Image (cartoon, rainbow, N blue to C red; front, side, top):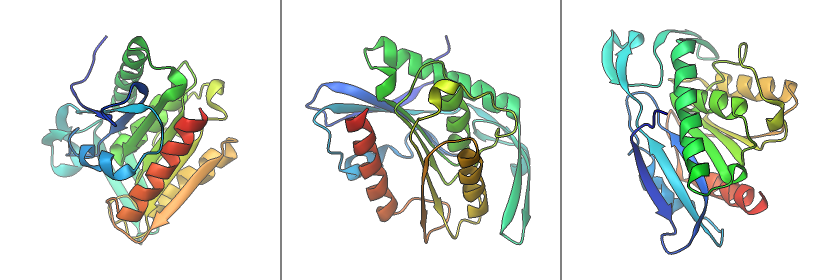
Length: 229
């Protein structure tokens, strides 16, 4: 079983860990990218949470002239029409392989004593696309899915496990995002709703990033999901 290298933070550090969040970074970043956000989430549970930030392998990325960088999968092309619609051509096989690595991380958390129903899978941009695939195809129920500034790359090919039909999903996106237009976030929302999922959606006046208001909303959502699960 391949286990990706990770950055881990347990928060608060003085409480027993009873939940885990596996949080995937975006293209060209690494597992350190979102680790500093953890204390800003202001979580309200009476137990600890293990945050796991895996590092993607470095591979050539076609849209960046084949430059080798951390990536969950290759992106062949991005077609954007007037910044209101977009089509991102992803290497689906590589994306699915990354999703299997996330499954391995979930399995390891279960082996470490965490219930699958206390595990959230999250991701930003490329990491969010992998999170949709990984979480919705996993073999056991999960606590939730958090997708930030991302898109549902495998919506037409995914084989969703019916066990996740009631899984809580949060989508957050920047209204000014020039990298992954918000139209893709809204498309993910409509696709998931058509499939019968209940999805929370937040839009912010930001580009391809995170903002303080979003961090506050994420923290509130995580606290509610893990307290209720």
